[in-house]
Amino acid sequence: MDSYVTLAGPGRDEITIQRSRFIGQAWPCDSEEEALVHLKAVRESMRDARHHCYAYVIGQNEGIIRYSDDGEPGGTAGMPMLSLVRSESLVNCCVVVTRYFGGILLGTGGLVRAYTQACRVALDAAGIVRMERTLSHLCEVPYSAWDSVRYALDRLPARAEEVSFGSAVSFTLLTRMADTEQVLSELMKASGRTLETLPEDEKFEAWKL
Image 1 (cartoon, one colour):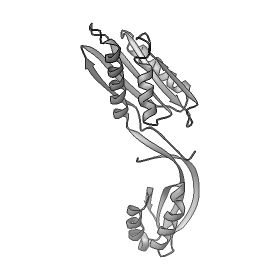
Image 2 (tube, one colour; image 1 turned 120 degrees about the vertical axis):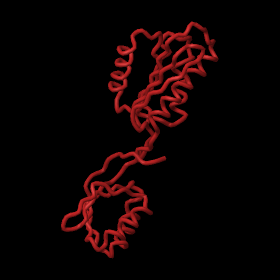
Image 3 (tube, helix red, strand yellow; image 1 turned 180 degrees about the horizontal axis):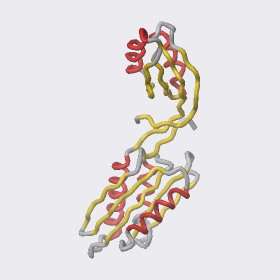
Image 4 (cartoon, one colour; image 1 turned 135 degrees about the vertical axis):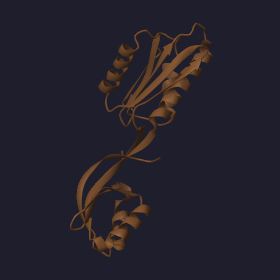
């Protein structure tokens, strides 16, 4: 698999419905163990809360899927949260919604809507990114070609990082695998064929959706 969708980082937000507080928290996770660490931390930090409902999906092919209503009526919390996560095609992520009961019963439909909304604000707070298989190259160009290369980079599906100015301009070029050949060809033209490149690494990197 060359790409997957996950969370950009941790996020937290909350909503209040009929005096009940619903605190949504979300994290990117690379393993089930990591998801369980987050869940344990939430339970320990808010021990006085009535419910800590959760959903997590681990693995680029959704190899591990877990959810829990944690005492809420069956199907009113964990499953709606999981449904929202999967509707966004998210993997390698965990969402926990903590409820402080406000004394007013919400009913089955009300709970489904509340947990879905709390999950939604947590995901929005975390942000969503596409992780794509990315190649990095160490690059170097003479100063005379740098302006042309920099202008080309602004128009190409690529990123230049760790730019340094020594005897020449060096930088790390990041490209998605599918774009690499085109990007290197365009940069070679822009540099007047003075661009020097050295393949460095292959990894998953976040790119805008």
